[in-house]
Length: 245
Image (tube, rainbow, N blue to C red; front, side):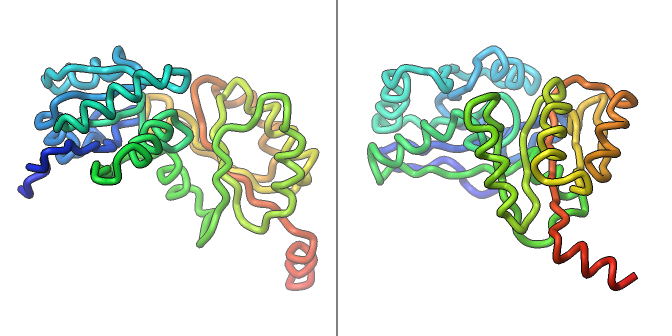
């Protein structure tokens, strides 16, 4: 196996993807990194601690999260400068994708260009949902989490200008509201695909035009987190499809 840990006097930050549900999705390389680093920076030490305990790995944990004071990030940067190798994890999936880990990585780059930031690839809900949707051929627009109130209409008006699938992270509790917004702003024939609780016990995948999906919501469990993929039917495209029939 390749040597993962650098001999440099300055430490390395490893951005490690972790399972989003099924713990069997952990990679061998991720486990190797966890065993080799000096500490693990977690979004939530309780979640990170559970993951490491499951794989019988003991490491010091330090918490960071979106509303952390900069002193916590400064501490992690100081440890890297002192030669400590650190694994960065989020609660689930790949750090930095609609996730507070982005702030830490950004500050590390700004603090010292000689600190290496190395990705340890693995699971991300975004890629998993795209792979089973059949809706994304080349490009897509990743919107992350929608604003709950302020700026929401502006977002949907912007989406209307796009000519590629749009991918949103959403909670099942807010799904109906978001689908109604999709219908109102983008049209009732807009195609959507929903991936709920990916890799978990009650995972579900279904799609269709948004009006049909809204009517059928009661037949699905509205719990957990999901990825929503939206594909607009543009007027010109719809007209061409009609003429080809």
